Amino acid sequence: MIVSPNRIWVDGCFDFTHHGHAGALLQAKRTGPPGCQLICGVHNDEDITSNKGMPVMNNRERIEHTRANRWSDEIVENAPYVTEPSWMDRYGCMYVVHGDDITLDADGKDCYRVAKDLGRFRVVKRTAGVSTTEIIHRILTNENNISIASPEYFPTTELLEFYSSGKDGFTKHCYVFDETLDNCVIQSNVYKLVPSECVYIQGDFDLFHMGHIDQLRVLKSKFPDSRIILGLLLKSDNNGDTIMTFKERALSVLSCKWTDGLILNPTFKLDVSPFPHNYKLNSFELCSGSEFSSYLTTEVIINRIKDKRDHYTVRNEKKGMHV
Ligand code: CTP
Image (cartoon, rainbow, N blue to C red; front, side, top):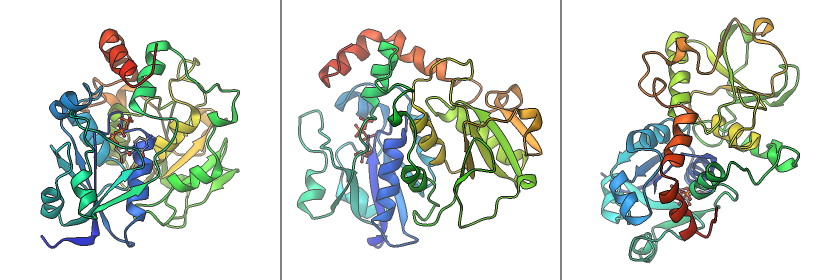
């Protein structure tokens, strides 16, 4: 394959596939010309375990979540942990993009040393405040470092606008509303939202994962001609605290390729919704028969960490996070 600046390589573990990863993918896409292709190399469980520590989300969950990102165009499984230019060549990518942190292999060497030496490395800004370590810490301690009383708990318009970007990284795909359809915060410039042509799903989308994403996919298959609008509840579905902040949940759902619009903190009840078809997240209708939604819940992920508390405590301590 001809190596071209129109094809961009990014690689990583993408554990939890959180909005920090999504932000890196969107920035990576914007390093190329409009219409460029983003090739995402995902490391396998074995390589992550030997270089960094056991991932929480397994191979298939990380791969399919990265595939469901709006800005990723192609997924390459088993991508080497230390980036190999021969792999970039094979997929026609001139350069690799990574956040402005240094990733080390098991020997403590920079994973991008070869690409850097060849001048085939580009850097984007890493998203502060979110990481696999940080999410594990919140689950182990039952505490979030950002309280609902803090302005940081909520997304800024600037961030909402950034994560509403279309597949090309430049157009505005998603609408964002505050509480009702009367308060439009971000307007799409690629389609006109007509409520009768939409399907609505409401939930907390905490730790946004493949169990949620597969429900959006099922919705799309039931209503292929409809736009999917998500209602993001401020509190958890059982009215308690969520692990992820409102901002983090909003940015995560906006990064998903199935999302066409988002209503922040919807104040209407489902039975008086402006949309013709309405669903609650995790309803039996959406979960049954779907590979991920039938077993993967936020609770299951929390238990993966709590069941291996000692392992994850040691792993986090190595990163300077003490329980
Ligand atoms: N990344 C980012 N912001 C974050 C976390 C990751 O921009 N908060 C970027 C990384 O710089 C990299 C890509 O996302 O370019 C994939 O990162 P990954 O290999 O999955 O791992 P980490 O950087 O270790 O992220 P985490 O600590 O969350 O596992």
